[in-house]
Length: 152
Image (cartoon, rainbow, N blue to C red):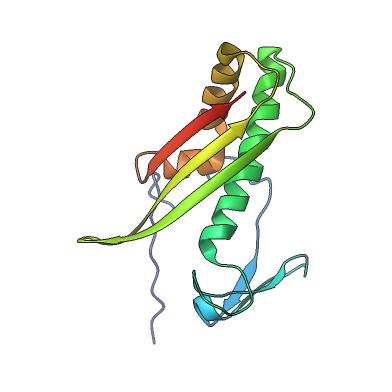
């Protein structure tokens, strides 16, 4: 039996684009109605389909949480370089839609970035810089509809 290998990469070798800083290793059993566990046991959760009465989270919630956490990290990184002091309580309220259309399933997202105390100009600089450096933003750019709103 032959293994199926799919390489979807900008370079032909499928190798990393730079120095790998971290590799998440997660095993998912039985899809949306199953479980997910990381090799280091820091993640160990039940999964359930959106709208299900079963306990557990779903991939859309996990994606929203991951993107939000990463986006805040990117804002902190960029704010330091822009010399813009971020407020102590920075948060992102994320909404990720799972949709079905004529081309199958797709996602779209809205990030509401809470930056109390910043000016509109400061918030815009920080958010735009973060959206250009956050790996989740890079992964979604041009692939899904994204709306990012500053809440100041």
